[in-house]
Image (spheres, rainbow, N blue to C red):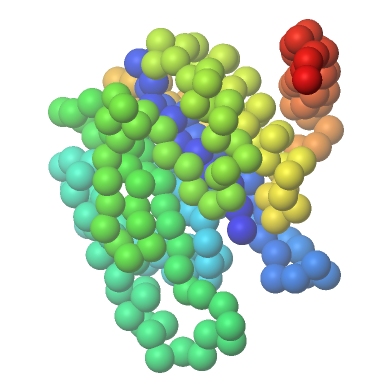
Length: 235
């Protein structure tokens, strides 16, 4: 399992994903689950994955093999369709393989901007179909999302700065990390400033990152203070 978030704001897009992959308690490893394709001045495309690692890697490898075709697409909608068809192809390739009790399914978040349109964000289902974000649904989560969703619901603001968005996502991920062992550090972070057509901040956040530690400890203390300030129950 993993956890990934793509969030659309007035200023652009921000992405974060963990790197944990496990196949049992004694087989834990780290793999990056964020891929980026960019042509400066023209387009930036980011893809997050969750679910079966082999499926996600196969999809990424096929896109790389067909990079010329992929990078010639003229809209993010076409890019979402391209990835959806690639997912279907990978699933078909594995249809007759023994599953051993597992699943070949993987889900994806696609976001970015191609010159001539605004930044766009998509959720691509394991079957290859997809939906686009709207003002009512300005962010997507994949993987183990339930623990990190409440803070996004309560604190997201389309007008927020990238600095506040990073803080928001770190709180969301910290809540998930403390609740589910299948999600783990380090975390991959990437920002995209709308209409810049170049990659923004790219950072890997490990367990010793000073800012992450400040957010993790500060959020825990803030929750304790908020709980203590609530009125006591009177039966």
